[in-house]
Length: 132
Image (cartoon, rainbow, N blue to C red; front, side, top):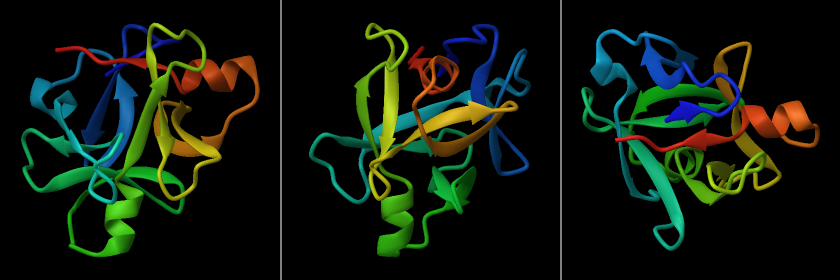
């Protein structure tokens, strides 16, 4: 996923933390399978790591991280997002938290987290392009 307001940066995991970086190496650290949401597969998605199958992008205490699916309802909810039109540009996408629907996946200081979104900067931070 490419960052809207830092277009040379892509969502990736590094040491199980999720962030945006340029020139990701190894490239597979920035590759995720978009799968039906773990907590709700109707209109929701989850992001499974390509190079760590069974590990998903999730939030924990609002911080984005890559973690192994432990099979709990809490994990499933933390790893589930609703894909919506981009908050800064509707031709891109944003991801609303399943269990905290007033919060969206965004980067702040290059780290991914979920936050309430109101300002133009926050909207840009919460907007991404899915790349192949």
